[in-house]
Length: 92
Image (cartoon, rainbow, N blue to C red):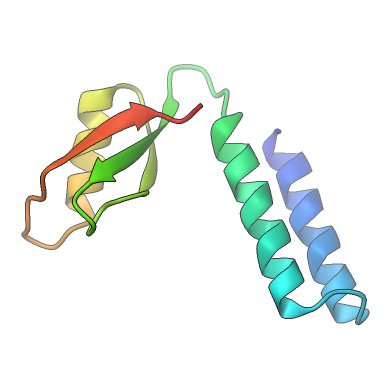
């Protein structure tokens, strides 16, 4: 899914909410689905989406990076002063 398609899907979900055709929970689920699809189909040249697993502080965090080492650095940077034990793997 490209960025324009993702934005269009989010916009449609918001429009349904505004029209009363979808509840907030429905919209949250749809937007989360769009984001997950976008992350798993991310195809920018030279970068990949990586998901952290391990320490609960970073569990499930997804970052975009050119390699696993940079992804680890980006996940670790999101934790103030604490260096949790975790691994990163490409999102598939």
